[in-house]
Image (cartoon, rainbow, N blue to C red; front, side, top):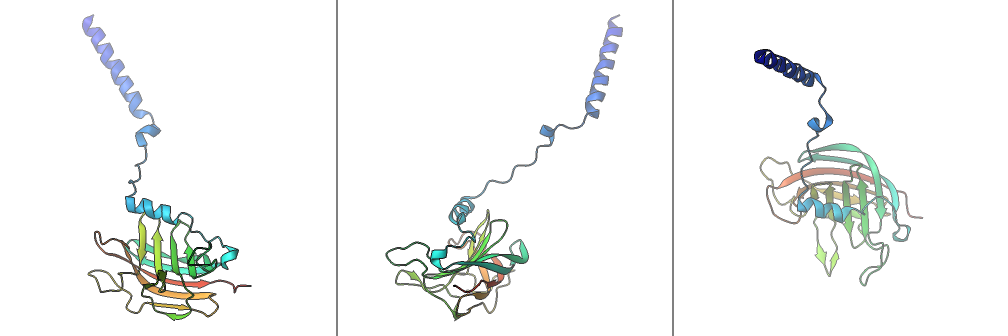
Length: 215
């Protein structure tokens, strides 16, 4: 009798095991992998660029338009038309700047990334792409690519030399028409932009902005 009970228990256990193995996996057994935690650099960049959208400020003479953007390098491969913003950089008056002062060309990608040319002074014509800061003003263009969840690339070091395994734009250029309705940019941008930490990473940017003339 003992042997019979033992055999019966084994049979029941086997049936239960077969039944459980045939059940579909529950969602908790297939939980998706959690995304990697953002670095402090990425968090700071996301916070800093959160409000930099392509929504115009009429007081600063900003107009909405479009930009054709090509970005290639460091895992980025993008070409497309995106919303853009052109006009003055400063939308609030300060001790040094009036509303509408400066230069701004911004392209807003749909993932939250941004390509931007800015300066504290009006820029037109063929513009030297070297960043320059004089008398507490950005008098040369600051050219940036904010890559969402990664950080901010810029031109401050990228054009200094050819780096192993990376193609640097040999002839960076920035041309802005007299009414600041169009701008054409071709340049290499580097991350990290502000700290020399880790490998130098390069993205080549080619951007054409078009915005209506100021009324």
